Length: 337
Image (cartoon, rainbow, N blue to C red):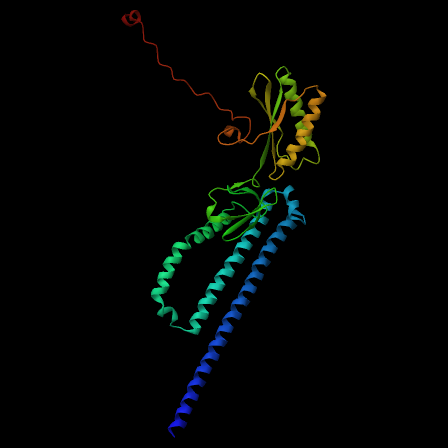
């Protein structure tokens, strides 16, 4: 009799355990399925919004390819690049948040008291992970601010210090850069302390042309400016050159040569192409004048060099400052009279 009661008790106990296990398993499966569905839905929504914004920009500019936007207003290019970058970052954030929430929900479902039972251990681990993960938090926050402030975007040519090249991916922790040699650099966002973006606003071609000391400087300057102006009017380069070329004058004088500086303001991303063709034209034009060039260099200014010429070669006209004059003292004779 006692044995039968014991067997019935064990049977009821295991039946209860089995039912609880089955219920828990069902809840865990439901949580995982809901998380996966939310991930798919949110990814679809984000991709859909990004695609609609990009398609809308291209339709307004009447182009089909993003590269064709380089001849359109710069704001259109920035909208496309920034939207795609934000879409990539949001997809990564959604994935991480859903994994964390789903994991905590599964643990709580399996044992609701497990987090409370390990409160001290969890606090210690949290403190340790807090110190260890501060770099990860720094990377994430810095990446979000860079994208939100439009410091860089996918397709930009940037100089991040550790690497220089074209931005291929902007993640929540890593920015992926491909340099001119094809090397892919993975730069942590928290390590980026400055961003030099060569794809925003405009660029400038700076060519220092060294001519012989005995050359006719005025004639050379006129010839250089004529060649650059003719190139700016060319149909191929008209959309890439923003302003009329300028001769900034004699940059330096030495016993061997006189250096004349020529500058051309271009669209971002077209500086190198314009510079290469302009050098070839200058070489041909000055060869026709019988002038042999000692050197032909492209100059990249750094620091404060040329900082006063950022807005152009012509300084603003200002009125002369009035000079206050003191009244002359009266002579003693006039004072007595």
